[in-house]
Amino acid sequence: MTNVAIIYHSGYGHTGKQAEAVHAGATAADAFAELIAIDAEGNISDAAWPSLHAADAIVFGSPTYMGTVSWQFKKFADASSKPWFSQTWKDKIAAGFTNSASMNGDKLSTLHYMFTLAMQHGMIWVGTGLMPANSKAAQRNDINQLGSYAGAMAQSPSDSSPEEGPLPGDLETAKLFGKRIVETARQFKR
Image: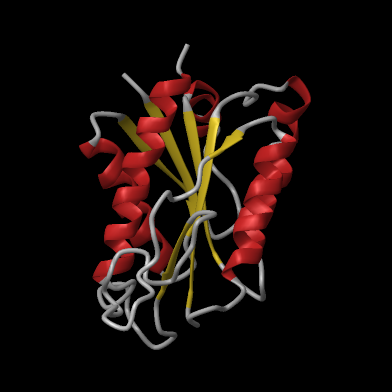
């Protein structure tokens, strides 16, 4: 069975909801998927590291704060220098997702940070593979309405609760992305 670890930080719960949607897509594709939350202090449990090492795919998630990942996610990324040194994650599938209050909010910078982290680990990056909803008939709840290829993007207004955002189209995008990650990981599984 394909093993997917979804490691994420969520400051207010919106990115956590997006992580759950990626998880739902991965499990719907018959994978074992585990959600690993980075806490408010930027830490994960000691038991989470072996889960990351055993995974066929690692999916990174962070809100976009000030044009990049949250400091909590960055602390996790810095702590990943031990598996980097031993190349523990080399040739694993990697992917990423992010959420911010603004439609743009420089979310692509966050995905680029995650991509660079994955490349330093020698991982294989997977994008969404989803066409954007960019016609005149497109609506806000369409799949990939934010038009991201590099990873899944979502938007949650700053005054919305996690029950109100991300919107259904962004969550469906995240589910389809989770499924694609599993399908790609299966192609590379030894």
